Length: 536
Image (cartoon, rainbow, N blue to C red; front, side, top):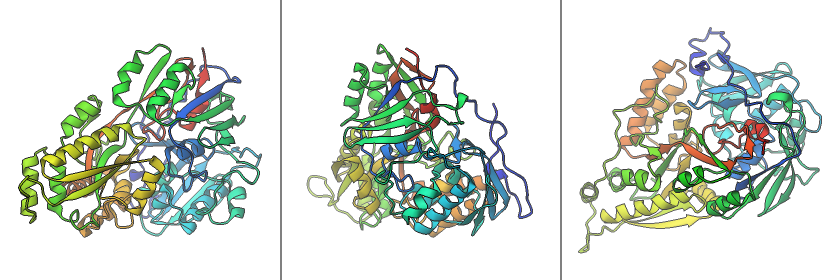
């Protein structure tokens, strides 16, 4: 199997001038099915919060803006990066990177998409600091310069082996001629109120009925799919209150695709349902519990360990996940990342008795009923039925250890806002794509990390992550990442529950979908949606 060369191997010394290219391009999407006037209707459970892809935070934000604003790089099932807008990428030395983008790309208003748009996007995000994933990737970014219509050179403040591939994958490119006149990209709503939207993806948003639907029209010139034209004439994202209503709509033929993954209990049922197919997408993310260490009780390692040992992980995977998930060994390194994964790090044992010993050791005294004076508020998204189920098992396990957990299920967008503010004791949720250990740990565990929900600041952990980020040889980077993962595990800076592949449902009258890792991409990524054709 062809495998893209790793960005980690692109630079080994300051004098290196090797160009990073893919060893071979990913297989093109299937060419079956004709361009038609068909409408592809996709179900979602959330409205769009931000139309600006640089600050979007809900899944619907991501799905819809992804169809308009391209990424430089795509991702393969094993986490390796592949070409999208960029055809070549890499480093010329330890503090200079580059992207070579496709020529001939255009925005839907006819303006050319050039390296100037790429440089503008990266520089504006660094300057304006929008609260999105891309800004979190730019810690060591200095500036970007368009040296030709197709080449962008990126200057780094410090060596960073992950910056070029991760920025390329996570960052949407926006049109300078639309965003620059609007001022700060951190404040620009991009809500279409001034003449609509401009797209360089396969579709452009043309109509919004909040709480009901989002309509997108085909962009006729989209060279990233065979034939250069998306198959369906129109995409409609329709909003439903929950996944059960989505499934009913799919069975009734009211929608053609469900964007979010299926609850495990529904997979077998839909696999045998007439007129429906179920696709499997690789999982590069994980479900986890994060303990807010700004809270005095949770700042104590023994309390976090006690909570970790009070979770019945096997029961969660067996009962809630229907056996469709696997343990990571309570490690933030995914088993699919085989070069990094460390089998010596093992899952926290489910042992409420040990939890009680740890709490007593930490100075807590149980009352006559065996309960400790500890109560924590655990938040989760109501739009995530799987987490909602296992959160109850977490509560029950804690009760056996004498700890009270109050469950607080919240509408997803409110839940995300509360998470960002640290308004929780325990966070239950998922990270969709954890593809690059050095970058992922930087975001999750460094003091200024954008997803550091535990608020950890461990000098030893910081040093290991920093060393990994300036190490360009993968073999040399692995020990740093394994040591960092062990620190996270042993100190319960994060409690990784499981990783799983995802199952997506669609009507059998459609074909041509291209599954990508994670729920953010799944079968509603731009290449997949543009390749989907109605065949029945």
